[in-house]
Image (cartoon, rainbow, N blue to C red; front, side, top):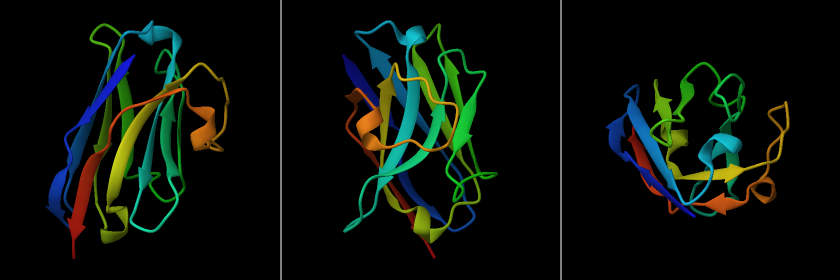
Length: 125
């Protein structure tokens, strides 16, 4: 299984980025996908998750209304649109997949089965 995150970069406060996660080696449409982030000196934290068919999405309160998660089960891709970025959004962003079903925003790193390498998002003030 491989998950490849991309799309990070340096952006000013208020700017936007679109992160992508390419999945291979798994039956992608049977997995939920999540994004987590980790800032220096902090624990990895939940950002967003999307169900296997894209019908259900859940977000951390800190990003709700600013980030949007979507997926394309034909292309085996997940996309996280980051809008109205703030300096506190600066972190390494990781995509991950799981077959756990949880209809809430209470997701933790241990819930995820496969992880990709992260992509750095830096928001300047």
